[in-house]
Amino acid sequence: IANVKLKDFNIDVYERWRRYISSCNISTRYKNDIYKFLKSLLNYATDWYGFSFVHVYRKMHNFNNPNELPKEMLYFTYDEFQKFLSVEKDIKFRCAWQLLYYCGLRIGELKGITWKDIDFENRTVSINKQITQQSCRSRWSFSPPKTAKSNRVLPLTKVLLNDLEALKKSDSELLFGFNDSYFVIGDIAPQISSTITAKKNRNCELAGVKQIRIHDFRHSCASLLIYKGANINTVSKFLGHTKIEE
Image (cartoon, rainbow, N blue to C red; front, top):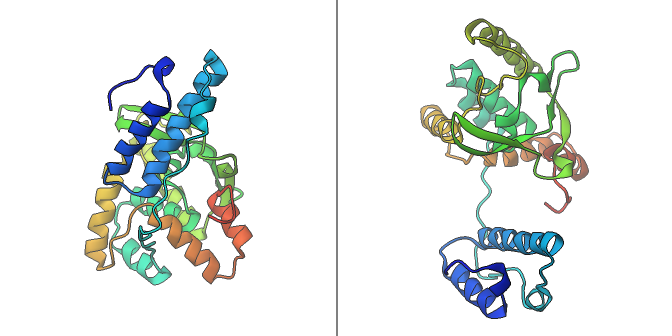
């Protein structure tokens, strides 16, 4: 699909775009993420530049594939997580895995945590920002959490709190210019996602547990909360979901 100016965007262009996206070998969910992005562009053009796409909107709708098998949601049981954690010797990554598992964080939320977000007195972590754009250690930017409900304050386990205290002490001694604006999982800059994923893959092999995605730590947290008797309302708020159905 060639680049099209907004003034030339019409039903024919939309239908050609839709056929192209439909032909791509990507999940229906990913197709709908692209579709949402397109609608955001059109809405921005309408609100700020006076364009009108009312005739196109009548033809626009989500992608749907009833024959597509849903992806299996993997998760660590508590015992599997303890095996996974037992092979981790780096205190920074011990904290990373526990924040993901016990707090159900998204990867961007994890990377966005700075020391000022850790309240040692009240044993909590504040989730109020995330790293969404990062091409390398020197190029990154903050953005608000995914949804308004994603702004939340979460409790920290005693073991995690102790590890965070040890990590902060170590960082304050080793990192030049250390202050509370430094990143918990990083230093003056956040850690990159590929390093976190590579470390996770290695630990799964060493511990002899199944490979799960970084995002599956959120599923693991939800599973643990439900196993411990939390109701679905609590789980939804804990994970920062906008809707309970998620």
